[in-house]
Structure formats: structure tokens, C-alpha cells
Length: 407
Length: 189
Image: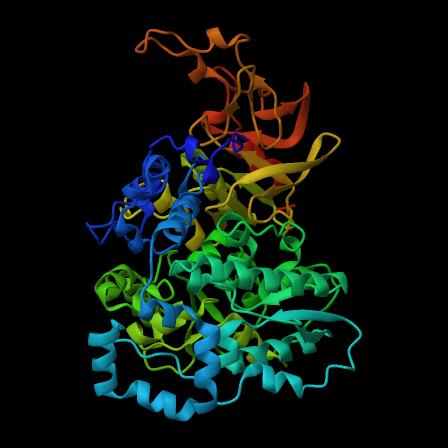
């Protein structure tokens, strides 16, 4: 393949075909965004000459990587844009607070009921909207009073002989421990014990999107060091979130310059690990037959880039009595912290509009308008917030659906 | 993952092949590098989606990177995203098109087919690949994989029994696979 040359991100291979521009979700709704070709390989030629050519409209990039998936020439369009933002863009206090999920989560968690209550108050929302620039339409995901790690410490896993290591991520730890509990239950049912990493930091995706590359690199190095220990002990690393998985597999080397070739093959999304173990006959799971779920499956952007959605779909199909409709593979518009910023809210909702309509149509198609058995399934936590807010439909990670279906 | 047929390439030829095999009752996987376009009427992306809705496993935004062969048979192909999950099948259809879709690649000396390393018919000598007169018929547009009378691809001069080619990847004048023959040979068994 013609993929080796001297510049980062393969920029010389760009033929200016504009396929990336055609698939860019932001391009379709925002005339201020120059588009992936111009922001990426084209702009990079200028920026290499003089950093003054950095265009602040690059902040509109969702980092969905659809441009890279579409590129016939193997140009890392999204990585070029992301790297430029890390090098040239700044951040304000709001961006800092949104990006530091670990720190904010640790501070908020002990006071969860108060914090959740206060953040939901209309005057507080109005204040945050006008002072901090966090859009008033958004509600922060509720913090959990008890962290996942605290729960996990009390789980006796000593009865197992085989183990995996679970990278839980910030969302599971501070906001939604139930997803982590579901994963532990599922993996335990499969005959494996669960360990946590010796030290786990946020994967850094929010830091990268908010131009805090140095901190992301430090956190990434901590994660990789802990993962290497787990892998040396013969354990695979499992994640429940496509974003954490994708960031640690691909953005660490491409954007942060963290070498991870030894870790990468051991870093799994739960569905991939489970599918491969079940197919090879190493384990089997029994599912109940009375779960009549109607599932609309949404492929998150990072799942699209990972290309692993069939693992999830094939696993879900193993549950008797579920009906699955696949949504068209398009962006929901939130893109992590992006959609929380008030200057982005309208773009965010415009991008997601077609998906929301499709979910509504699927609900009708499945005959589930008033059926509690209808659920949208996706592996990305921020897609979950966006879809729940915008459609009212409940959204579940496939890990939780599979755990629910265990016999 | 196991299928009856894997079609490599989600353009017009690949979509038609996948649809035909699926209709014959086969379990089909279509590897398509394309993504959704804003314009839903733009073929073949629309066709990819229609196939997925009918039940073809469409790996969209992925591309085949290599294959495992045993003797004169293909056992499986790998893709960029599924590098540790071989796609196994009894029959494979190569429909990756020509240069822009990366069905054929070139360097200074040669033109080659990157997935299987299939035999490619082309003129030796780079100066013979093109005509400096831009509007003249360009020889490189006729280059493509060599096939036998049934449209089967060869590697190192040896015909590969279960690897067929259709569409732009086939060299000018060479036979494309007849889908009816593939269905007759592989469906319902």
C-alpha cells in the first residue's frame, strides 16, 4: 500500500477528491466550517509553513473520523485536524472543566445528590449558559453517590481461575456504575473473573478535543503502563465504550505519539472479546427466552471507525426473541463535550436530526410506540445522552442488554 | 466469521453480485469501503444500505487487506478493521474496481492487485501505460486481473478455484464471472 511517506497523517496522498467533504456531518449544516479536506491536508501545508495560518474554525471538527473512513487514499484527515488543534488551539475555563472528567467526577461524586440537584435547577442552568457557555438545553449526566471502583473492591473474584482486566472509564465510575456492574456480571457468567487496572486515568479523549494534549499524553502513559502489567499477567483488556477503546487503540499512537503496538491487540470492546470467545467454543452463555426487546441499533462514529459493529449485532442476535433494526450509520451530533458548548448546540441538533427521525420511524416500524420493550442500543455514552435527550427513547449499552438477557 | 460467500468491493458490480448470491439463499458478506452519502440517491451507497436491510452482512467503511490460501483455494480474507477475525467462505468474489478504488495499485515498475496478489494483465514499461495525448484512449484503463473462461482469478499462473472477478477489476477482453455459474456451483450445498 502507498501509505508510507514523510509527513504525519499521510497528507501527501490526498488527491483532493473531496469524498471526505461529502461525508462530513458538520459540512452539511455549518457554512463556517472549512471541511475536512481544507481543515486537514490542505490547511496542514500552510500550517507547516507558518502557524499563523491556523484557522479557529477547526474547533467545529467533531472528531468523528468519518473522513478517514471515506478516504480512498489512506489520508488520516481527522488525525491531522486533531493534531493541529492540540498544537495551536487554546482552551478556556469551561473547556478545562468539561475535559477534566476524572477530577470533576471525583469532586462531584461524594456530593452527588446535591450536585445533581443543583445542576438540574433552571437558574443554575441559565447561569451556566450565560457565564460558562454550557448550553442550557443540556443536563449533565447524574453523578453516582458511590463510585464503581468502590463497589468493585467489595466483589470477591477469587473463585475464578481466568481473568480479564476491565477499563471502566469515567462514565462508568462517576456517573453510571450499573454499566460496570452489568459487565462484571456478564464476564463472571462467562467464567472469567474481573480485575481493574493498577492505575486507571481517563482515556483522554475529552482532553484531546479541548486542546490539552500534554495532560492527555501523561494520562495515556499511565494507562499504557498499567495495561502492560495486566497483559504480562495474561489478561486481555476489556472496555464497554467505543470511544475509550478507539482513543486508546488509535489516537494514542496517531495523535499523542504514544507507542502502543504491544497493547493494541489486547485491547477489546467487550462484544468483540465475547463473540470471539463464543465462536471459538471457549465459553458459552445461556440467554433467557422471555426477553421481547425491540432494538434500534445505532453505530457510533467511533464504532464505525473501529469497524466492529457486527460483533455486537451477532451477539444480540443470539438472544432469543429480540428484534433488531439497524439505524443508518450517521453521527448523532453530540461528539462528546462538543455538544455541551452553547455555541455548538444548534449544529449538534441539526446533525443528529436525521438519526432522531429514523429512531422515531423505527419505533413505529417495530410497533413499539408505547411499548416499554423498545430500546436504542449503542456503545457510546455521549450518543446515549444525546439520543435520550432528543428522542426520549431509552438507550442501553449492549453490555447491559446482554446482562439483562442472561438466563 | 463464517459465510457462504464473501464479496470484496461494494461498488456497482459488488452490490449486484452480493444481491444475486443472497437471493440464491446464500449467507453473504459484502466488504464495502464506502460510507453513507448525504444524497441518498447516490448509488451504490444506497444499494449497500438496501442489501444490509435485506440481510447481507455489509462491512461498510472497511477494506480487505489480505487473504489466506490453501493450495488453489481461498480460505479467508482479512480486513483493515478485522485483522484478527478472518472472514471465511466457500466462494469469494473480487469486485474492487480499478485504481481510484484501490482495486489495482501501481509503483514505478509494476501494477498489482493488493488483496490476493492476483495476476494482472498490463504492458511492461511504465511509458507504455499511458498516452501523453490526454484525450487519446489510455492503455492503463484496460489493465486488470487475468481470468479464465469462467471469470476465475489466477495467482502465479495458477487458477484459484473459488475466487471469481467481476466489474472494473477484470482486464479488458478477459471474462467476468457468470453469477449463475457461481450460484449453480455453491448455492444450496
